[in-house]
Length: 290
Length: 318
Image (spheres, rainbow over the protein chains, first blue to last red):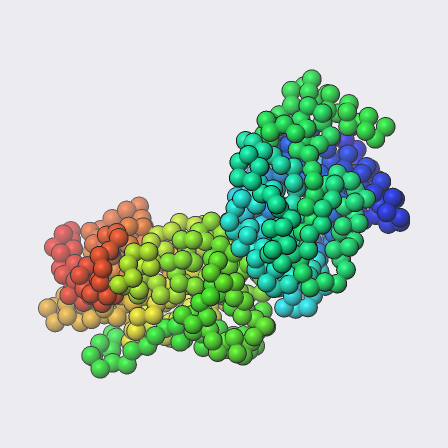
């Protein structure tokens, strides 16, 4: 029974250690569950899914203020998945939080499934905007944050981008405008795994010095280990403090994190583990929480 | 019936009706916001900014971000009127229009200013003649092309009440106020502005008053030309098209590309449901240097050209 979700969906409480443990258990479940989805569907983006898993687990199982029974409540926190291809991680996080039945994960990529290869808000309440083409989610997230700024609303907006995605010009249009507007309730997380589809970002169209770029656009910049749940929680807690600048959390991550043969391998951007590889991946992930 | 086509007829810039209506809506509905790409002046939104400084969002010269921000504002419960020169709004931000607005079913109102060849001498980079073909190809996108100040106001009000993305194509070229008996505007419904049973002339936007002038000339020759104002290109009014096809001949006329626009929409319907001889009047492609009025005359988008096309298509009528 490898894919039983740990008990107690929803946000965690207690010390930061307690909270990190709660998130860690669910992140491990997400990894095992999304690999099964990819194996069953025969396609997927395991590298980026595993890279983003701990960030999404921290958001969905601790940080985000949302009511799974009322996913369109006007005062909900918004999460925008700008790197829309990593739906294995997004859907497991959403199901784990109770936004749709966990059993529905079995329909991933099947005909007429609500779980499309890229997230679709008209299929699945809780998705904020349809993403997939890179460079789209961030501007929409900025618009959401501007709406909240006009209304002096207290909801927060979170956007997860890939690092390769930052090569899209629209991302910097959005970054410039968010800095100009001083969108203090907007937090962007960069999944900085340094690998885009074909190669290292720095060998393709280098992003460094990445923090300096964001600072120059008027942002507060924080760097964290994107697989350390306590560090992620601290960064999100700090981001909740009143401020007059948007904040970017540059999360150093490892593409394929948690599965030894996928880690830092550009070849696992797309891909499906064979039965032996899948068994090995599960064994490694089970050992991690044993 | 028909437009006031006297040479001394009062002419109106429909941008004035657009901003007046958006301001009126904004007074009673605080969800109304305006989003611009440094186009406060060309969109005539200066007064809106004075009245509602918190609700005018100027993203600067960044159309992709402008449309994405519009979709985000809709997510936050706003009704954004996203305005910019239609050449840049549609072409630069096409994927945002497709993915963020239409595919996401975001409640965004896109207002293309200075559409068609309004920027005549500035050349093909600044002409927006492909926009109707592009926008009507996108599922779920309502496409409106109002013809005069009254219809512009109605189109803006209808767009604000409509749940979903709408593209409203506005011109800066002065047009007369059309005479009409109906005071009802409905998305998806065209209107007959001049009766006639020999041929149907289907037009929208700045071409409607020219079509009416052509119909008056044809009437003097004993030809009954029905003039249909097809302000909604998508979804198109199929009932009215079936009636138009029953005349036995159709001419379409638009201030846009001959391929894929209003004429294309009418031709798709007729080819499948009611084949009749047709002429499609529009521009052939990238255009030579010249003023808007010169370009319209050069490519036969005037009363004489429309009447001539009607005579040609009548000759082919079964």
